[in-house]
Image (tube, one colour):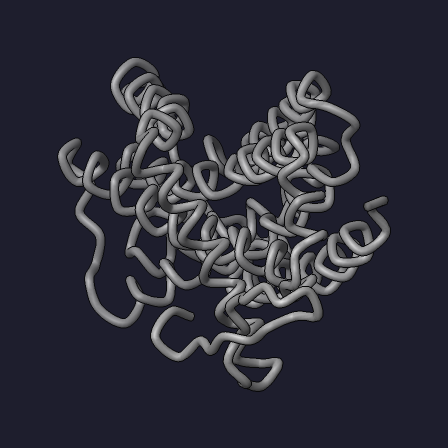
Length: 283
């Protein structure tokens, strides 16, 4: 905005800078980028935020991989750590929506969102910019988690399947971003954010992240089969070349299809809810 800006004089004779004449799309993208830059600057100045988000998944990898790994059995055979790692990647991207909600709640309490809404910027830039920031951070988190897994002996099959698996993980993260934005705008204060773990815990445990649903009681296994996290975990295991522990049920046999459908459905549901909630905030 600097080099191309012009100056003008108002009715009182004061001189001010005026935005150069560009289209609405240009300024929407520019405003969105400013939000992204703000978010990335926050992480750069406080890298402990990312480390905190990664702490639980990394500890879970070490716990389940080394402590319980020898006692765990994968249906159909195969190494448990190879089975576990894709599930841990899914858990990492799934838990990210709590961080998204926390950031929005804190910004709302501090008046940052009201400040954004009072500025001449695109209304969608705050929501879209936060989503883009979280997607960039998710790439960094996945990179760190995969490096940790590789150091533990995880050896995926690199190639097109590997790229598809990463894309499915990011698609799930993209969908859950809007769940976090909506919840962050809905919760009245930071004190209520801790309650989101009551959602995350059963969502991750009643899934195929740690064990195959065929090893659960029938009623619990049925719930785990239709968990969106199970679909992504099953699809990425196959794409990474890991043991799948797959049963004969329809969700397990069509995990790749569901891994694409679930994120799309969640995005179509929660993205409009998040945008509507943001527009209804009082100034």
